[in-house]
Length: 532
Image (tube, rainbow, N blue to C red; front, side):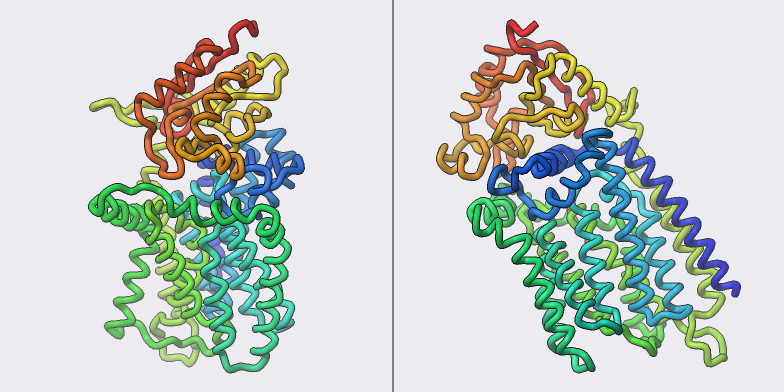
């Protein structure tokens, strides 16, 4: 009874911390350029356009398809509405992960312990909260992937559960391409298991995955094969990383930032490994093993992590969608291996372990979140020598203010010449064709034929657009007219000057907004000459 009371209080505390962190990150979290072009893609999809066929996109098509149904919320509430929806999807993934941990631990008190532990690790992590609140693919992918694994733990309705699982894992892959690694691993595990109902699981999983692939990937493979291949693969492998020393530094930075962001979970993972190797932890005491073994999930985590690590420039936040299943399997491993400290035949974690370990992990997660640099970014906009530069207003409020100004200057026009797509989304306006990828839409060295096929801009097309665009207002932050894709390197100073000189032949500078958007660069707002 005392154990369940502790578990209940930990759940309440974790839910409260989740709400606090989510609210802070939704309202105060730094803007990210990805939010703009992801939500803009969803808007275009809601208007009847499709990724790859009608506009450039560098992830799977499921995100804009699903978020297109949320576009009315974004149209009314802007980026804020998109963040709230994304955070709720992240919460859903956390709850599914808790249920997955319960099943992996075999149910009972051990299952309750594992579920609470998994939820603590996810909900009380400010780093995870931020990246599942800003509008990226992570929350949706995590929900699909974790849900797929949970369905494979079901013992009833085996074929239907496996069918749904196969569907969800393909949806995860069609949301974020690196999640595709999970599908063959799960299929091979199901194929190798010798248990009752194996045939139904294998056939159901394969049928569900094939159905989802036919529905959500095949149409794009038929109508825009080059765009699909480029968006899902070629774009991500074309990035320039410099010398081998730079590459090594990027890989080390990936690991360092990942350990910082998920510090408590990393320490627990190391502790688990040491405990197993030294015999401090007992053998697996789970007498009711899940149909999907923990080893399969560990292999999925390792395989997808290896894919992320192998990327030319691995970002630590790539791992965010992978953390819910990681937390679930880590929590289940602890629940299954905690040493029994009583002489009874009860196979549950001892009361002392439950009463002390769960609150300790909860407090450790809260302390780690409290000390995270994510919190500093809510109020601080960098450093000037020995002085911290405090924000005069949240990034989201400044974006709203800039959007109001742009709308006023546009005189009712729906077109905004910008590479800052979150400004267009917030202002409820459109960007010129070819600029749907925001700061990553400029491929100066491509031929015009190839750029037109893949719905991006080469040098001649960009110069023509700047010279002839009908938009009454143009707005460019430090991300605009400055990045060369697909290498993602800074443009040469001469080319930057050429682009700005071309822009300023028709547009005059109206105002500047400092500390704007991601990285807090200066937003320059221009108006078309003679449009006053």
